[in-house]
Image 1 (tube, rainbow, N blue to C red):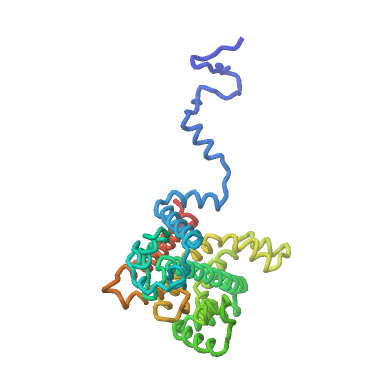
Image 2 (cartoon, rainbow, N blue to C red):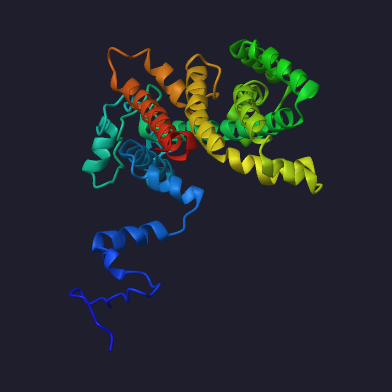
Length: 358
């Protein structure tokens, strides 16, 4: 018959080779919960997102960007005004709806409402041409976000392709490609945008009313400049990552079994650069938005009547003393978007950069 200790464990026979259970203690509930957490499998992306959502500034930035995106999508479905529509009441142009303050109506609109009509409020007032200012800010925000996202995708694709080839091949190819990058760094982007705008304006002709005609040659030249100039930083960053990664043993093993360079870059090298790619792309978006805003501010961005946050801020300068709120709305929107993307980029860097793990 087996003998038991006071804690209920069987006593160890002195001549037995079995483990002495008295030397062990039962796990506490906290240790059991910790073991459950430690035993859960995770991925690099899931682990990074969990760390990202622990960052209050990054979460706040995501909330702000989400609200802005919801507003610019939903607002045109609710607000009955267009960004280029001059206000009218019963088919008559409302000349008194010029530079209205937020949530105010013109005399003609007040008379229309007094007679039983319904009129959607002017949330941000109106501009000097009797156009609803809120819907113009909404469309200007759309333009800025689309430019930022599209430009960052151009930078990502060109920079990733160029940097991958340069870093993987190395040697003379890398030397020549990096000297090309150095020459591109020396080109003045503002001067090239002005020259391209002048040349494209005379060379290209678009059908009236088409989407390209609304965007204008200035914006097309801006996209071309992003494709020609702004990818060099991304290319250098990815090249530096590949130079360190390609010396690892698993890359040597892939070469040994006959894997092609394209497959090695696509399957083995770029996935290990994903954190740098995500962070750089997130930080490139506010840079592109700010570039588009100041170019529109100096008249090299979106062509009228299509609004942009920069062009709205430029138009508001003329009536700054009389209508200061007209500058506040587009400027505040630019600040919120750029600040949110910068804080989100910092949060992504802290979450996905393995060198910052503690």
